[in-house]
Amino acid sequence: MARIELRKIRKQWGEVVAVEDLDLVIEDGEFVAILGPSGCGKSTTLFMLAGIYMPTAGELLFDGIPVNEVEAKDRNVGIVFQSYALYPHLDVRRNIMFPLKFKGVPKAEAARRAVEAARLVHVEELLDRMPSQLSGGQQQRVALARALVKEPQLLLLDEPLSNLDATLRLSMRTEIKRLQRHTGVTTVLVTHDQIEATTMADRIVCMRKGRIEQIGTPEDLYERPDSLFVASFIGAPPINLLPGEARDGRLAVGGTELELLGAAAGRVILGIRPEALRPGEGGLPATVLDVEPMGRETLFLLETPLGQLRALLSGATAPYGAGDRTAFTFDPEDSILFSESSERRLPDVHVRLPA
Image 1 (cartoon, rainbow, N blue to C red):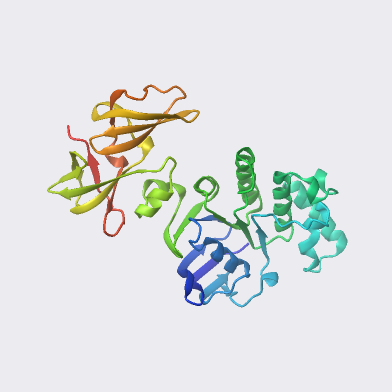
Image 2: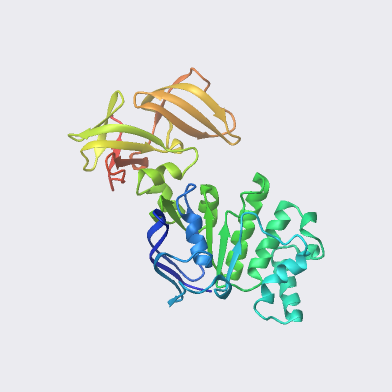
């Protein structure tokens, strides 16, 4: 396995900068997800780790050894692409064995390792089938076996679940996490899907416009987002964001004032996650504008003195209907404030509903 370091990594094509000043350490055996929207630089970063792209500047190290100029075939990296990229003219057995040809592994040993890898991902009964005879989930497992058979230092997963249906995505998330823990291989997952990142990874690297916005555990990014971007990108349904003015220990939002807990002044953005809102007497007066059943939960769109808010309540049966009047409250620690100008979180600053 390997400890991976990226030091001031930069990648550009002409005047276009895809990744800029990337500093990141991935510990030996760690599972890290690189998360962000299209064009944020996450796939470019993965391709530099794989050796497909060479950095324009900076240093890339595996276990302290620079690998900037090391070609992909010499890095001992396993990669699973979004399209799986199985060879259509080779059966499953030969697809899995294929990477071992370039490592000079004897045929008998390669065949044994292919069976072991197939067993690891539960496709040992499919070894004689062709890729065209496999379902999407089975192709995904074969691609994983092919990446693992070479016993890589680093496993790279490039949007590996995006072509699967919802049920398969759920089972494969669990399966990949199990495999990573079983093998202990250092793993980097690239995805735009926050659910994949938060359910599978030990840490998340959230990127925006070629730079890192925040690095932390899924809980860190959800509960303590460093920026408006992270707060907006993490969480479903998305966080409620309300502009306001902080002054004299109060926060004016919409048509009401809240008590300010902590030091803040000037234009700010108040964030409250939908699941933090709950019915409560003495809370914000609210009129239900819309009701959206979501299975075990129900999403409400509310009109309140603060503005329109989304509230998520557990339970398959909605306690309110459109047009109902009620009241909602929240705990001060569930409120997050951001500077409007810098878009950065104001640490240890919260608000409380007036008594």
